[in-house]
Image 1 (tube, rainbow, N blue to C red):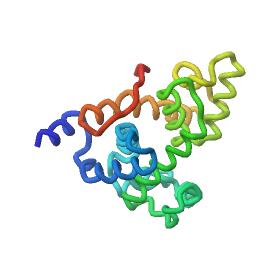
Image 2: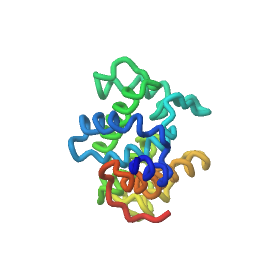
Image 3: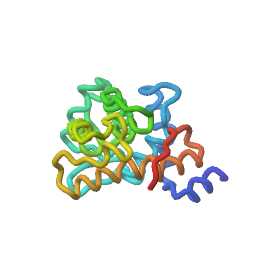
Length: 196
């Protein structure tokens, strides 16, 4: 009962309890025993508020809000996800953990927090945009290895609304939602020192 109260007090949807064990299992299968489960829980919270039937205005579906093309592509990086089912919670949670891992392994940064911010930006808006933004930061004399107050300032060509949404995505997950999940006992997150 205390666990439920802590989760509700932290603003975590009650529905999240239904998927907690599955997220933990899937994240650890992909990332290992030290998987940053609180980060991924915060990400699911941001994506769908733990509503497995969520559908966005642009057609993303399920807990992890995969677009149809991305859901069809996921089996390329995980053959166990060969039958795309973004509205199936187990499929969606494994796909989220796998896609995060795939993105994380392709990005380099000076800190774990900066690397995760880039990973989340790529999840939300595409890896190509993050790589172009890193290049723009470097060309302007800022660090391409730091997200906060460096790469995050650069827009390599997105529409302003898309850019603003994308920049708010890692900020909300890492600085606002992840600490809630850590406090509610969802396991470790990552150390981040950015500010809202």
